[in-house]
Image (cartoon, rainbow, N blue to C red; front, side, top):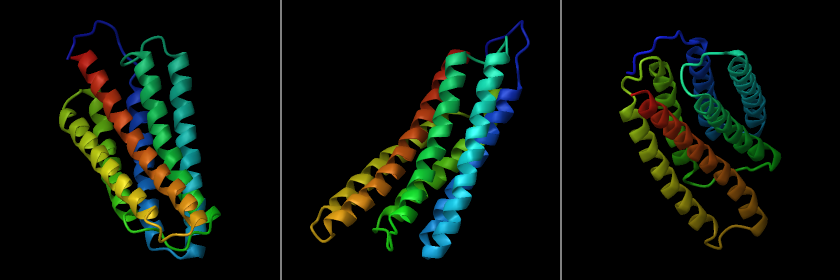
Length: 206
């Protein structure tokens, strides 16, 4: 790691870790959604909304700290990008749950559980990686694995779309379900954006 003569604001590390832990909470709520009935889904949506609001608060705290800090642990634009990408993950996960409830979707298509499993694993890896930003150690395997998971998510998403468009679903139902699976795919993309940003930071700091 590059030697520094100036002190750095360290609270960013804790805030990034808190944001990532909140994403794990969101991924667990997605897992709960799979086995829930309609009334249970509404309650899960409320909890997901609260988690998303907590994520917004964490993001705003990072931005506030960034604007008030003279010295930052790494480049300001990377801090902004990392915080924004973490926030995007929660936004897309919350969107997917909200759509399931709003559209009163009774049964999710086969394959959605695979999407959610990928997101859950990516959330765990991201939460494990954020504390390592302090030292920039043991991060390479993280961004490689998250990129692999995103590729897997792409394949699952394409198969889901093929399944939805096979002619066995009502046209309106297809539109509803496609929005849900697209939101989950956007969440997977956002995990990759986080991993790519971490890789950029690590390269700059090496």
